[in-house]
Image (cartoon, rainbow, N blue to C red; front, side):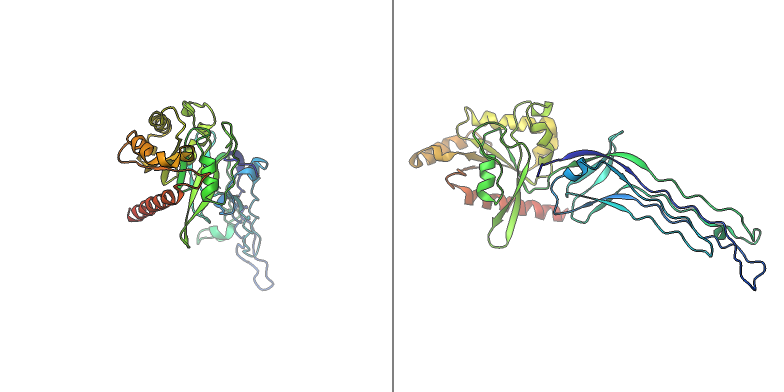
Amino acid sequence: MKFVDYVTITVRSGKGGPGAVAFRREKYVPKGGPAGGNGGRGSSVLIEADANLYTLLDLRYNRHHFAPNGQPGEGNNRTGKDGEDVILRVPPGTVARLTDTDERLGEVVEPGDRLVLAQGGRGGKGNTFFKSPTNQSPRFAQPGEPGEEKNITLELKLLADVGLVGFPNAGKSTLVASVSAARPKIADYPFTTLAPSLGVVSVGDYESFVIADIPGIIEGAHEGKGLGIRFLKHIERNAVLLFVIPITSDDMAAEYRTLLDELRAFNPEMLYKPRMVALSKIDLLPEAERPAWFAEARQAFPTDVDVYPISAVAQVGLSPLKQALWDRIRHERAVGEDL
């Protein structure tokens, strides 16, 4: 299925039904009073988070969503039927904005969360509502309130515990495929990953976390170069950032700093997220040389950042990395609950 994380739709809520002007006509009540019922509420247009969805693809091909109007009130004080709300199902992590002004309307994060995009109009009051001691037989009723029509931009930001950050061909897709059941496209050329993918990583018998493979970032990604800027937003949601840097890099420390600069330029708050580094493709070194090589390579990175040598292909170093990620995720969750 094609990954779609950005779509613009038009929504229109229903008008409220008009109130009725009516009077009682009963056999033994020669001067019956007002009996006009209220109009029904116009239906609203909402989005609801559905855990079974991970793309906005359905909405790309169905961009207009018009909700029905409320029904008019009737005689004998019968209220008109409310319109049935139109509920658009979207993946958790979807943000809604007004297209014309970029005003943020809100987001749906947890499955079942709902957000009203266009509020249905209220039904008008029937003439019974306006009866008073000085007006025993009102001959007027309210019209229903109009609905709302809006252009809405929906933007998906993936919800994952760990986001992989790295240049193209750093080995991110191979890592996701090795530690989870996800099968992202893997090949020997840049930008193999054209869309983010999620994988569930099992830790122990009953625990797991979600890892996101983001298309490779290149220098200048925050300015629109490559594919990175389109997907940098997905990293904003992650609890932990894992920088994947291959040992074949000409300067691993410089590559790390460049990736940090791109995150800083896109959103400075991302630098406050916990960071870890995985030095990938360690299998290219003879096993006997790895300890000495890593001891030297480790000095190129900040002392407060944990660094792990790994090989996703050869399954080297993955267990310690998974456990370290899980420990950090649990810590971040505990901190979040205390806030």
